[in-house]
Image (cartoon, rainbow, N blue to C red; front, top):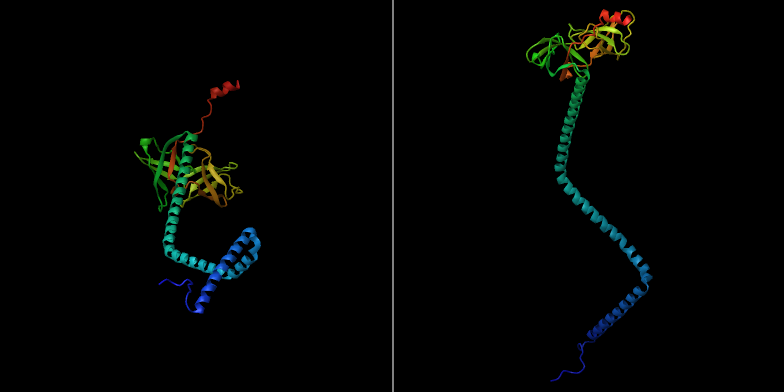
Length: 294
């Protein structure tokens, strides 16, 4: 049997109207969408007001969503930093300690190089160097002040030779062995050195006090011309010590002199130079003097 020519969705009018309105709404939606598309292409600014209104309506929810995302990200970062902070802190502390150690080593190396350069310059300038050695030890508690030098007769050291460092006079050789020598320090009570003030040549004698300082005794008694901070150098009187060698700096004034602190402290002195005993140039012979006068 052939199907009927007019197809219906059913015998229910409600179903028929529902189908009709669905088709009608679809066609109208397509027409409206096509019209809006044509308007947006022809005039893009026609819906700017609507877009702004839509943005205003969604701004508050967008702000809340952004804040939620930021809070969640910060919370995750804080949790990760909490677990990594201990390890990072330990690493930074270790690097800081290593940096401090390297800094101390660099400063010590720089100071050592500076002292060695000063000693090398001393050897080149004076030209009277016998030996260049280290102070092996020195007395600390004894009332006498001696030091042991790591050079002896095998290197040309002889009794009575002055010993000095880059800072100034240390003492003189008292006893000589094959590979070592005993040095009488200028702070010993038996050590007497002719000195003068470096500024104007005020003469005096420097005698050790046995406690690491020396006593400056003026040759000409009267008004004491010394002042704190004056530098005393060897005068060369009587020979042995080369004139102009730094010795001490005045720290305390006395009625007839002063107390001075030695510039070359044996406890802080590593290397020293042993020099030839100095002697002033002999006067010209009488024959040469008479010939010059005639």
